[in-house]
Image (cartoon, rainbow, N blue to C red; front, side, top):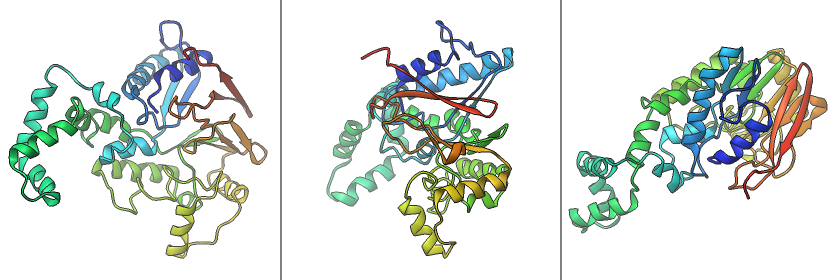
Length: 310
């Protein structure tokens, strides 16, 4: 969530990067569980560093896997509720003012119509000034980058919703019984298809409360998911531990690692080691502890480090 300093602290403490911020993880596999963006100002810095590491890691037998989070999908869909001014500023250049004016000119009729829905007698100049006032420099470039065919939109679309590495499943939100009815490859294919089309329908894989980007039911009561199950007349709710068992059995895996639901407390290893909850509210926005999970063989080890800057 846009806290690059926290990301660097964790990556360095985990032995994944050196003092020059280059890959030092050898043959390790780094899995980042999504929600890189929103709430903080430095999302683009983190993305660029992960892209750099993804190029460097294979040289020593390592690997970087970035899982798609719901906030990356929200940026592609144009849901900008949690984008901070600093994120737009990161895209700004000396040409941003001109590009913003050009965007207004190209989208003039739509912008005028939107404003006049609220105040029908506004002049074009009044609307233009109002729109410029609420549209920060870098906004146009941000939207172009995160469009489905933009550089970051395409980058995010290549991120899997679910990854299986060894005997471990990695997913941003969670894997519901409904999702586990499909093979992982099909789930990822449908999510990528929705990203490419910016599919914002309520039942889109990018919005579905039972889908891998949003589902919280493996670790908490998920009212949205239960409401959908009731509306669709799906099965009745079962205890999370039983759902985890059924999902693992479906995919022949031993454990699931999830993020998405922030909690300002240490990493939780649940259900006898079958599920790890690793979102400890790391971003400065939340102020939780800086943590990472290490998996070696069948052993999961939670780790933490203090912030290097106050």
